[in-house]
Image (cartoon, rainbow, N blue to C red; front, side):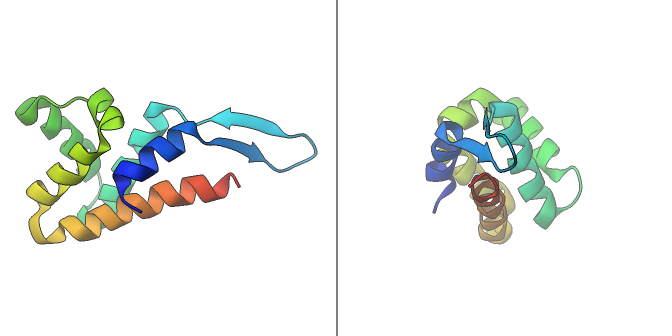
Length: 105
């Protein structure tokens, strides 16, 4: 499933944590961006995700809020900036987002 579909799903997905008491929590935008950064770091290297988002802000004028609202921009810029490695980075970010969804189920 593409990132552009995973982000809205994750934003609207409430997690019920198992245990003696049911606890409901929402995933906030900061957590989603952190997950994306880690997915980039997994493929490109430590702190690459932070540098990527910094580049989006400075070079393209795209802030974190816009990425959350329009995750297809993330897909597009990852492909553009990472070239041949873009697919691996997209897959890594997608895997991390999916894992966050499944952990709460």
